[in-house]
Length: 257
Ligand SMILES: C[S@@+](CC[C@H](N)C(=O)[O-])C[C@H]1O[C@@H](n2cnc3c(N)ncnc32)[C@H](O)[C@@H]1O
Image 1 (cartoon, helix red, strand yellow):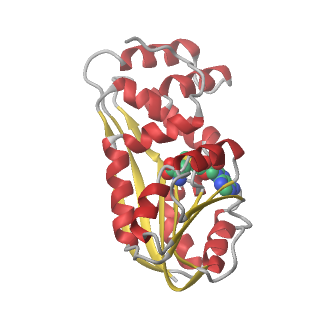
Image 2 (image 1 turned 90 degrees about the horizontal axis):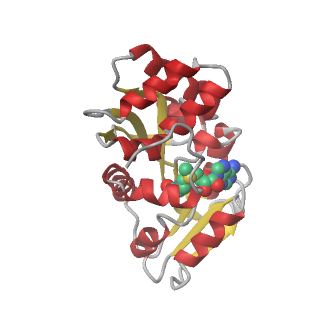
């Protein structure tokens, strides 16, 4: 299979599901759910639930006597989330924004936001909303990458560095929120119980190209004048030849209210 510089952005829902289904995706998601220590009968909130990736797993943990609420602002995601959970009576999917959560204050026992805060306008306000929505004693799990840690092996180290700088400066809104997650959680009034860093490693070029948007983002970097065209093309062409390595760090924080 060959790859092209600048392929268009993949459909968002299938992108999220494929990322979640990768070995690295499954591992940190499982860990986050385990650390949340969800009990039968509890109310669990998934903020920025996307296509409902984790809603069935949350439903299994709260059981028939519990409740799972998935919130997302994107109607296309909500359609998929509802389809995925149509046979699960304890799951409710609501349209809403993390800056103004559509929930009664103090009603949630467990909440999670997985790769959502990196996209939002005001992460501190979003965390304040999570604090408002949860009960005293509630547990909250957060997971966000820190894109400054993105490394891609090539002989052209400078272009790899320029690529990472482009991602952090131009592509992801809160690209370095991973390192600040515990501090932001404390500032929102949570007690931080656990901080973990996981490093998904990509040794397959095509998998990395899909998840990290290597070709798509390099094309944008070239088009926007951040990286020289020939240099960018050479960098990308070289990636698919020979052994491949790329990785980044994802930070998970478990905190309590
Ligand atoms: C990278 S996806 C992650 C989806 C899901 N948490 C998962 O792990 O598969 C980010 C999701 O956050 C949602 N999102 C982004 N900003 C939001 C906001 N301000 N309020 C609610 N949802 C938001 C997006 O619509 C998208 O579905």
